[in-house]
Image 1 (cartoon, helix red, strand yellow):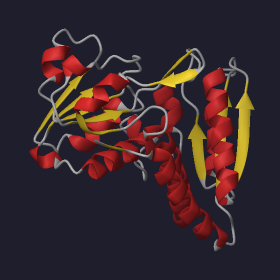
Image 2 (spheres, helix red, strand yellow):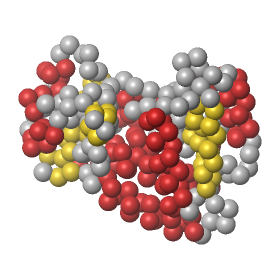
Image 3 (spheres, rainbow, N blue to C red):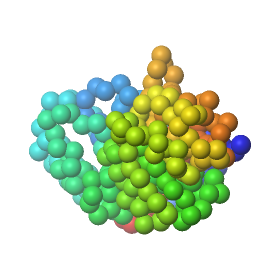
Image 4 (cartoon, rainbow, N blue to C red):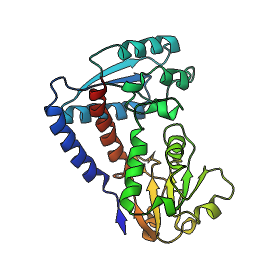
Length: 269
């Protein structure tokens, strides 16, 4: 039973990126835009700041109150688009309810969209979302041939499920997209050779829902009692040929791919 050691792979990627950044005269700069006081969003922004500093890149935070107008935010994004010192722009999702995230995301310049949010919104982007890259890497490391596999994606979300489906629908033998409300989810899940869950529903995937030797990719993180919990119940791992744990799987790898996009973005300037 093999699994993704996301922390080990992340550290290897970050070491390589640090070496690359050390040879860049004008260091890549990530501009993070945070609207409101959502605790989880603040945590993720702080984490990205630390990782930026770890590879020698620069980090600038633009933090605003939740009641700012959509027009005000879009104007700020436009300023960042036109700032030659800024390599990449990251808008922390979710945004306040009075904002149209598609309008906000569409305001990001394609060459600075290192988080791939434009891709998530169905717009042209120079970058694939880091979480999608992390999932694709996990599937590759599993050794399962996707062109011969039946794949199930659970979750239709803006950030993970939908963009994943866009990347994979032409590559796999068969693709089913479901969510936690799908009535026959247990029957569907039993047919999957590769099961990717991004539902944000703690321990939803039980052993009786999966076939033997399935590849389990868990991209659905929740927090219970201060601990990170995935969509896949750990008791399911024994039936899998390969799995990604939570924590320590897709999450660490995602942030490594964000930094990789940032360094690539420096070449697009």
